[in-house]
Length: 429
Image (cartoon, rainbow, N blue to C red):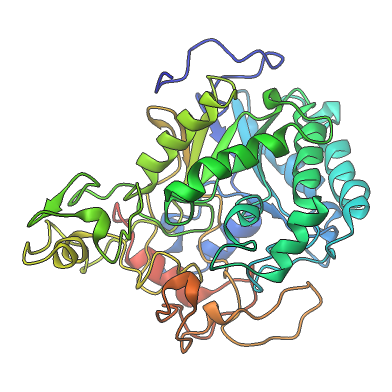
């Protein structure tokens, strides 16, 4: 399949081939105010970030928080005479995040009807209001859900009982299919399905099976492949965009980079190569040849003084990879509030072949999860991966978690993290 999307729009009702091309992107005033209040924060507070709809109450708005209509009204004010993209994360599946606790949701594993009628239907009703027909609405659909049905079920070393339940009852597939169908039927909505990241799905036994799972969900509950405009990778994750100092084809003393502890037989070393490969795989399975990819670059810059300027020593394959890699996590499986991370590439349209945009889908400065148990009414549990003293599990090679201390609940403002992300930004601020 071609690596660049065709210039003609896909046959899905006259939607733009790339919604980001020639468009401004909505700046969330709530996030912007928090960012601007930090020392030096005005350097990035005008950047566009996504609005996370991660519980029913946020659709209408709650306790001083803007609801979906408030954001769309604000977007109309920002739009002016040109095109404007609004980015929404649709994230409230039944039994959400079956492999992690920090981002568990409010709906139990069987509450698919509530998901449809109280979450997706109200969102669709608002988005379909003719008042908003002039906005380009990008939806990132159900982060971290479908890949769990491939990698974290019985027969896999990382299996969890909760993921087995969600695979058996089919409610992830049904929920995603329903969301894609309802939202994708609206003329100005562009669905992007979450496709994990290279450090999760880049292995042979995960890659194709996940793409097939995306197809299964995209054809469930009345949805069709044409309701998927593209895929998003690295959402709320830290994987480097492009590793310059080593490639998957390198070897040291006859030992392949794939045998290094860091790469661990993965087929990919970074998000750009993974995104382009996943795009080609999706097209080969029947998705529209024009599907585009989004890469979340909000926290994968890994700049600052520790950023390597050349390859590591060739004394061993591990010294070569570890000395040269930008991604300075202890392990690729570490995902919570990572110490040392920096802002990545600024949001931009069409930055590389097959890529619709680099985006900040995870708003920088919003916590991934609390570093200790905090009682709350949002359904958010305590995940040891957010605890800096945690010594790990099979998912992160029994490594330290690499998480920052004193973190608040997922989604809440984490000032210390935001300041570190600015300090370590690459490109530098």
